[in-house]
Image (cartoon, rainbow, N blue to C red; front, top):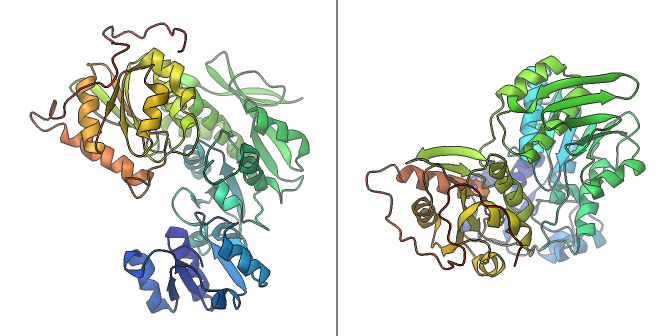
Length: 476
């Protein structure tokens, strides 16, 4: 087992409990492994730190990869040539899971759609469990799976790289935007990994596709499964769509149509969340959930933690945590959600970049951002690409960023953490980053907290004083 993170620990424990001789390998020194990983020694798992040695790779029958380990890495290729089967934790789980699977992937929106789909099935009275990239490794759900139940799985491109027999009854791709370009050679390479979610589906299965995404929508012609499209941009002859910006509609060719709910009944903000809800409703219908039950579930469904999560209001400034916005497209959608309600935004950006341009944010920033607060490794690049569209300020850490954002904001404004970057330069993961943001916001409630950090703007080419959003002008 290569990778001693959450999924690696779960897979090692699962295999050892079933009589396998397991070696857990991670490049980190043993004293840096998590407590959860180190306790596996008492369960019969062997430990190897550093690069996996060739003498071991020559002997193994099965190599299981954690998602963060590239499937093209040298140890993996060596093991394959030596005759080992190479799979990931998701494929391992698939060989033991009972019941049926709903699998959800895409560049953005996976977690919200997965959580909502699970809630839709649960509230409809179906037996359901949720896991995968959303938190609980799939292999940890094997023992609780049942022949009559559903497992709803959020899957990343990394996890899909190493599937072989994994077969979802319902599979959805929400969107595709450039992401993880530090791992993939091109957007085509990345899209190929996502497309693998459909590889084992049959005509009895359902494939859910975003008709508004040109690349994803083009896949409809080549799939064996029954295709269900969704769209927020146009009415569909068959599928789920947003009508006149206000009604979420399901239409069956030859079978009429049904208004599932109104957009103003949703607690989720932003057009991207309308797409997520349409995808989840399509999955719910495919699994047999009733429209009446699903409407009530969507009406009560609140944002998932770290996904446009409302944190607090401090002195008239409202703070939102979208730490899961780990790429530029996710940050665009987060900022766009507040453009919809015409609120000015102080935006916290930065972290470990993914070699993607930040220019797609420019027009929204120019129109709605009061200031940008930058943190992390990619702050220099972000400033160079976006400094002409809003005042820019640097922060040393998350606490400093929150203080500066609060000082730059005016009553009625939004402070939005939507970093457009990975978190690993400063934090363990996006969840750690989101918690740090929320803790820093809570500190602002202390008497005299406002103004502790200086609010010196690096760029003042566009000084904002009018609280109403300006009309977007030409970009520089």
